[in-house]
Image 1 (cartoon, rainbow, N blue to C red):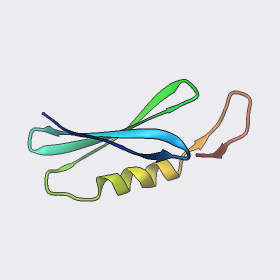
Image 2: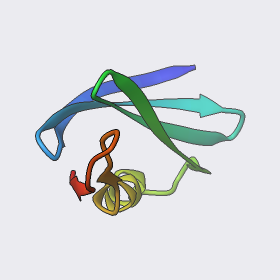
Image 3: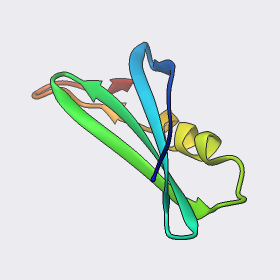
Length: 76
C-alpha cells in the first residue's frame, strides 16, 4: 500500500523525493535522488510506530562522496 510522496529540499543541491509504504506490518521509506544521469535509492525498513527514518537516511546520505570517472571525490 502506497502511503505518501514528499519532495524534500534535496541533498547537496540535488532534488530528492521520498516514498513511504507499508509492507506487511512494517513501513519502508525510500529516498530517491539523481546524480550525473544515475538514479540512487536508499531504503529504510522499520516497525510501523518507529519515527526518525528520514533522519537515518539523511545521515547515510551525508556520508556519501561522489567520485566522477577519472576524478576526485567531492562533497554531496
